[in-house]
Image (cartoon, rainbow, N blue to C red):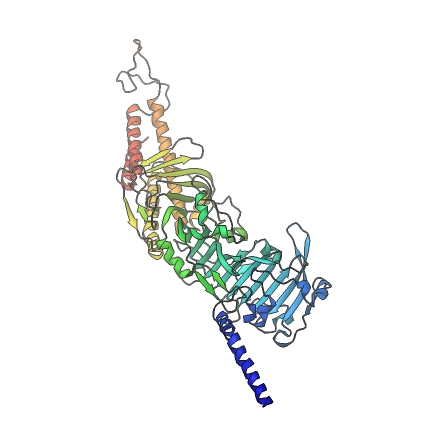
Length: 631
C-alpha cells in the first residue's frame, strides 16, 4: 500500500512538472523557428555559445576564460589550441599577433579563431570560408572587432562576411557584405585595426551587396543605418559591374537640417527613429565602356532626394549561419531596381562624366573610389551624397527642384546631350584633359520654365563674361526613356554617332578657312579613348576651334571698321571707299576694306546664330562665304 502511494505521488509530481514546463517547451521551440536575437545563443549550435551576447550586446570578458593567462603569455606569432571536449575539440585557436599602425607604432593583439564548420582549418591558422575571428586589440580581455565568414551554399567560398564593432565589450554596429558571384572576396583590409576604424574597402565588381546596421541594446536586434545598402549589378554578365545603387538612410528628424547634411549613425538611439530613405544614388555605365583595365566606368549618375519610409517588414534577411542577432535589415536588390523607377523625389541631380580629370592622381586607391559610383561636388547646389568619388572637371551637373515623383530625361539637339527634364540650371567645368589645362565652363539655363534648357553660356577660364551665348529660337528636344538598357542603346546607337559626325564635319569645314592646332595629346587621345570620350574631345576641340576662328576674323573686321579715316580739309571723313581716296604708293600690302570687313562681321553674327541652333549645314555654308571673301 505504501509503495502504491509512493508511485502515485511520483506520477503526480511528473504530471505536475509536465504541465508547469510544457509552455516553456513550446516557447523554446518558437525561439528556434524564428531568427535568434542576442541572448538566445543557447538555442543554437555550440559555436554560437562561444560568442554569446547578453540582450544588451555585452560579450563576456576573456578574463573569465580558463585559457586567459596562457594567452597573455604568448609571444607574437605563437598560438595554442584551446582544450575542449565534444564538438569544440580542436576547433578553437588562440594566437598572438602584432599589427603596424598608421603612425608607425606596433599594436599587439590576441585573436580567437573559431572553426564553425569543423573542417580542421584552425590547425593551420584558420580560413576565410566558414571561420570566425575575434580580436582583442588592447589585450584587456574585451573584444573590439569580430569578423565572421559563412559559406551558405557549401561551395568552398564565403558567401557573406560581416564585421562587428564593439565598444568596451558591447556590440554597437556591424557591416555586412554579400558576394553573389562566388568569388569569395568581399571586404578588403590590411589588418583588424583598419576594421575598427572602418577603413576597409569593398570588392565592387560584379554582383555585390553591402550595408550597415547598428545594434539595438533594448531588443537585442539589428537596426538599419547609413548606407543600407550599396549594391552593384553585372547587367551583361561579364564579371564587371555596370550599375551601382546606394541608399542613404537618415532619421526622419534630419529633414529639418540642410539637405546635404549626412551624419553617420554609429550607435542606436530611440531619438533617431524612425529611419527614412533620404536619398538614392545611381551610377550607370551608359556607354558600356568598362573593362578589366577600367572596371568602374560609370558615366551617368543620378541623386534622388526625398523621404521614403524604410519598410522594416519587407527590407530584412536572415541566415541560420549568422551569430545572433541573425536578422539584418537592408533593401533587397530587386526592390532597389524597382525603387529607382518609383522613388518619389523632391530634388534630383544629374551627373554626366564626360572625361577623366588628369590633374587627379592615378592609383589603385583612385580606382577603388571610382567603384563607389559618381559622387556629387559640394559646391553651388550640394545634394545628399555619400560616395567619396568626387570629380569636378569634365562632369556635367544639373539640378531639378520641386519634384513629386520619378525623374525624367530628355535629349536636346542643341548640344546633342541627354539632360534632366525640369532642371533650371546646370554647369560643365572643362579642363585638365588631353594636354588642355583649365579651359572654362558651359552653363545651362531654362529661361522659360518649360523643362528644357534654352540658353547656354560659354565661359573661358580667363574671361569674366560669356564668350559665346547660345539661345535656342526653336527648342529641338524630346523626352526619352529612363529604362537603363534602352537609354544605353539610344546613347550608343544614336547620340554618340550623330554628335561625332557633326563635330568632324564642322572641324573639316573650319580647316578650309583657318588653321588651329590643339595640344598634341588631343590627336593621340582621339585614337585611344572610348567612343563617348572621343565625342567629348571633339566637342571641346570644335568649340575652341570655332571660338579661335571667330575671334580671329572679328579682330580683322574690327581693326578695319574702327580704323581712323583720312580727313579732308573740311574735317569731314569720307571713308575708305570714297572714289577720290588716293592709294598710298608706299603701301606694300592692301588692308581689309570696310565693305569686306562689314560683310565678314555680318557672316560671323549669322554663324553665332546658326551655332545656337546647332545648324551645322548653315555654319558650313557661311564658312564657304567667308572663304570666298579671299581675305
